[in-house]
Image 1 (spheres, rainbow over the protein chains, first blue to last red):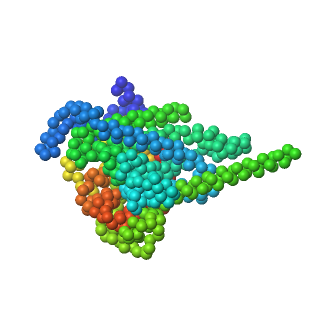
Image 2: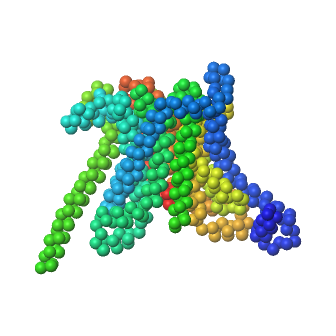
Image 3: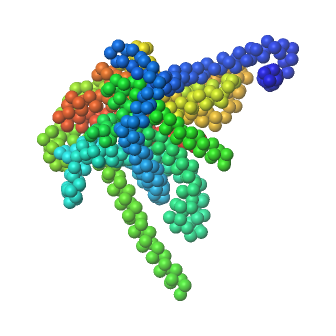
Length: 320
Length: 286
């Protein structure tokens, strides 16, 4: 096996240099190995700081560390057992699912419709303007938008309650982030506000790639705008839609920043997500082992959606 | 007879399409107001004093004074901006260089086991920072990098190289290779080909990658929060939460600080929109 591939390789690389085939092919192979230097920096960095921590995380998750003595004891699967009986983990998982569902509705299907509306406008200047305007929040740091909405939801100075009471809806005026029942929804709403412009832009790019003659032909055949949307735009951006659903769900299970900035999981843990609960356990309560177990759960969930993404793109390749 | 019917029908259709168009336009405008007004409110609140902030939220500032902005700038924001600029620029250079090297190796050299290298590099796209955070804390503490710029520069680079390599590689695959074949004939080394031929040809995608990276690094929060504790090494997003904690009652200064930290990135986006969209479009097209 090894011999055949050697001959094939040297035969292909060293054109008819039969005289000194052996040493030459060694040198060529050494030269090929030397080409690894181009990828060396990336492989070392990624291996060291991206892959290795994932492996180490599983090791940490089977230990318990005493923060005062620094003593590490092996506890086997005890952290995972605790996790199964932790009601906050279940609540956090549910909040992550809520995040995923609502984000798919607004940032995938809503954004698709919006992109179709924008791309249907006649003037390129207006199309560009709307894409840019809706995108602006996505360019801004989540800390800024998180703090901004922290103020917007505040009853004393905030915009939301001011708008509600002026619109005669004063029964809805409340501290949105201070209420156990509304906190997570208020955070998710802010996240939609920030993120929909980004996916709208991506859908707009996908729609631009559809050949214009398809629309012209359909219009000549008497298809109205809704019919064109349903029969041309939607099927021809289906790959993008599938990809966006998966990316959005993956993002929803990793959510951390906005919850941390706006409520830090409160009030009374009602807006905890897996990411913030991990932070609370590992860095506030100094329980690295338990935090690592939560991280392992996030890892498995994102791997599942990642596998779905790979499967989806593979299938797409085959179809093309 | 049939002509009149047709005309009547056309008018009917026109009326409906006018109504539909008008409602669509007003929808777009309303959504635009919902998106932009909070940001304008933020910038305007930076001009108000505290008494006014607790008054009518829709009112314009009573007097336009830059006091809060100056105060925010002098009480920490200047330092945070410096750190953010440093970390963003350094990690952008590292990320783009390392990614371009890798992409070059994968598309232009006889490197063995290319599919494996591609799998390793692009597999990094699926791994999230949240999952790696606890081992990274232990690791960076052991390396003595905790609470330094280096921690952020290294991590931003390591976690963004997969995506950036992916973009540059896709671009290089589409680039015709006659030029570097000719250069090889003339005896140019791989290094010369990279610096003199391939890198200059990749300029558009390099610019797109730099912009996408700047957007990421300027706004990143999780790593910045966990790996820095001293205010001299904190980036803007973390610095903002510190300002909120220390000036919690002086909302006007917080609003000013928020506006200062949002403004540069919005300007970068509008100035470089073309390259930014190209980057995204390359990323999803492949």
